[in-house]
Amino acid sequence: MIMGFRLRLVTLFLLTLDLCILIALVVLLPSYFLSTTKNSVANAKLETQKLDPMLMSEELAVIEDINNKLDLIENAEKNKFLLSADVINAILLKKRSDIKITQISYQNDTRGRKIGVTGTAPSREVLLFFRLALESSPAFKSVDLPISNFVKGSNIQFYLNLIPSEK
Image 1 (tube, one colour):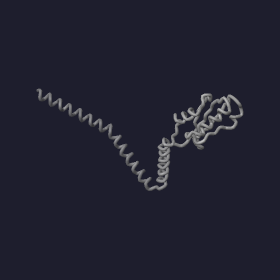
Image 2 (tube, rainbow, N blue to C red):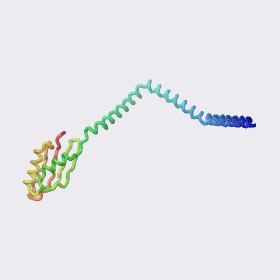
Image 3 (spheres, rainbow, N blue to C red):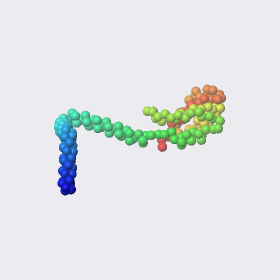
Image 4 (cartoon, rainbow, N blue to C red):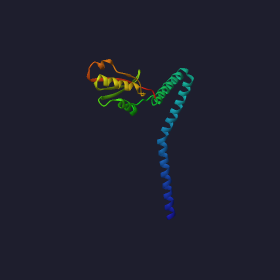
C-alpha cells in the first residue's frame, strides 16, 4: 500500500511538472516567434543600409557631430576659469583702507575674461594710486579705469575693468 501511495505521488508530481512545462511553452512560444521575426527584419534592414551609401554618409555625419559634442564637453574643463581667491586677494591686497569695494564681478565671453570692480574712493589721488597698484600687479594683464570716474572730486563711485593674466 505504501508502495502504491508513493507511485501515485510520483505520478502526480510528474503530471504537474508536465502541465507546468506545457503552460510555459504556450506562454513563451509567441514571444520567441516575435523576437526571431524582429531579428530577421533587423538583419534585412541592416543589409539594405550597408548597400545604400547615402544612409552611410548620414550616419557618419551623425557620428561626427556626436564626437564634436563630446570633444567640446571634454575640453570644457580645460577652458574653465574660476574667479579664484588668488585674483580676489590680488585686488584686496592692492586696495588702501580708505577705498571701499562694493562688488567684484566676472565676465567670460567671446572677447575674453574680464573682472569688474565697483567701489567708492575718497579722492582722485587715492583712486589713481589704486589703479597704479593694480597695474603693477602681475596678476592682471591690463587695468581699465574710465576717465569719467575722475569727474567727481571726492567720494568717487568707480568701476574698474581688469583683464587677468593667463596662468
